[in-house]
Image (cartoon, rainbow, N blue to C red):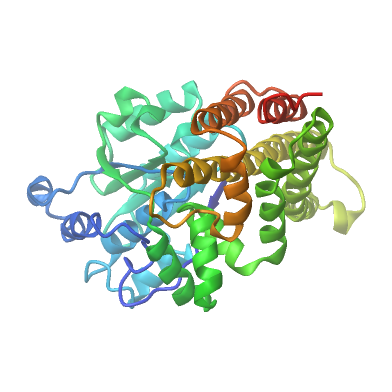
Length: 402
């Protein structure tokens, strides 16, 4: 677990980087005008001290929470130009803590540390704000530790929890929070955002917006990284290449290997930095020897890193599975004659061939097989290679299992 920051660049206001969430801005703006010294007016203005931000992956839940935090600390309600706004968005504000985890779960020790932090008076004149980015990953003990703090926050404390859906948070916690629901950003909104923030041309921005299916982080990666685009192109080519059992097994192996390569590339640098920090903290580098406490600390670090690598690998595979879903969904869209732009517009010819060789019912079944694989992978922790092999066989055309 790390207390981290969401980096951002302020525009005219702190709300500028909330892509496709215009419906939320008036609600949060109004709440942000309430002073921490004016408790009588809080509820009339829609302000409360516990919030739950929900929305699809990549919709910007934590970004919305950080923008709201900046507005709460800003004397002008989120101008985007003052010292308070800049420090919150840069992750250096003393009274705003964002907690995220790279592990499979967020444990009780991390939450207890956060609860202790929430009991402190803010260093400034406004709020002490705690943001939990992965509230859906709280263990049962962590939920119990969080419940009382959310139920009875300090006079100047604001909790913001982020999760995909309300069902991902315990009823006893979510019932004490005001719900803020984000939606999937539209492709035009994401296109405009990429052009404005990354300076990419319209064609590349439009491709990334469609291919990401509204996931902002994924869209940014597709817009600026050739390797990310190459890996996605490989995945979306599978439906047209699956004709025999050998093809299915080969595709499963490729997807598992490519996903692990991408996940390892992300985690390797972080692992090395954490190991270097641990060595420096225990004086291993300077003194050239390992104190007694170093061994258990190293063992705990390696265990956390292994969990993080497992989660990252499965997350990357899951992203590939959603890319596969987009191909079969495009095929159903084409078969129905719907006059819309395809997610994979660049592959329209291959998708037309898929339509000619299948039926909408068959492609719905294939989508079902992919979602079943996601459940096996993410909920039941089945070994990825086995999950992918079974899924790819299910995607074969009738009679293509020889």
